[in-house]
Image (cartoon, rainbow, N blue to C red; front, side):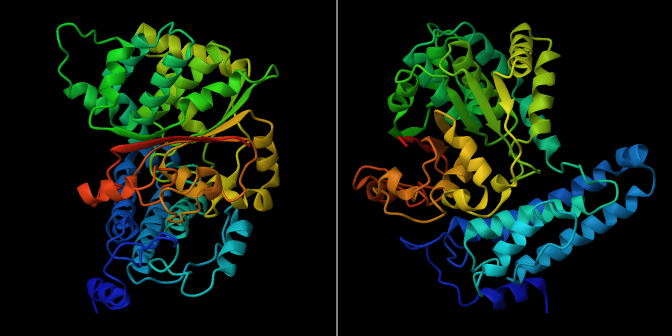
Length: 441
């Protein structure tokens, strides 16, 4: 029986509809984004990892010798087996290798009842996190490639291809006034950063518009974009309401150009004494293709320092100073960020991390995956309050900035989501709508 017929047989009883409200996102619903991701995107990701390994083999052999070929072959075979498991909706397997977080993962997997321990019938968050964790485990259990980041080339290429947008933003944000308007513009540019470089390249500047004006770039960032919730003023107020040292915890999303816009925003906070210290929370392992790791931060700072453009080089040197003086630091690495659990479980599963967050004035969670984990990958009523959907996760003041890319959403005005759905049933998947949400602790 072919893989295609196996797949069709395994999933023939799944509903041909969208994920209903008041349920966890799951790929068992064939019109869901979860289904599309597991059906097509994840096999494609695994294929790309295999192809990258083979293309890197000559350089890896120069670095490690011909014996690395055995690692490459074994990882490629493991990836192929994982694709087969996924296509047949098999159960998740326990970890038995050198994974530093295998105890936590195995405890979680053991408690999952059947069939919620199968790829397409589980919570989407569980399945997706498990797949990325398994992919990296193949490298962790190799002989030579334990520290190999199979996605690093994509993150670095994204930054290099965004060179012109970076130079423009660096000039526009140089010596920016430390007021609320500048804060909000940087925050919103950061929110829409995944498409900013593309929009800037295609934008036709009018005669009176200066390419290096923050006001113009702010407008460019918002082309064909709509902010559904804007709590930026509430976020701004946290530094006004205290005389004590202000620590900001920033839970990173993607590396590449998005990390550069993070750097501009966080540098603005420190430069203008809006924050005294910033802690960057990054991923412990290569994650979701583009998520930021500690080596990504180091590479980015060094890339900017060496850059021929004086403004970009100045940003790199400034960040080097910030990190040397510990005004900006990488927080202690936690595998909780690469686990499958929602954030309301943090207090039970990683009390040290939870306690660390309680020492911050605000924790800013960036990106769609962080938002899904904040809300437990659960489809709430779209008008439900943000604070309710956090389900008790309140270590400090919480801020979420996110371009909407899946069905998990809250805090909208009554009837707004229904009106958007009538206009475009796919509105929630394209990243054209954004949220800046905030709640006090």
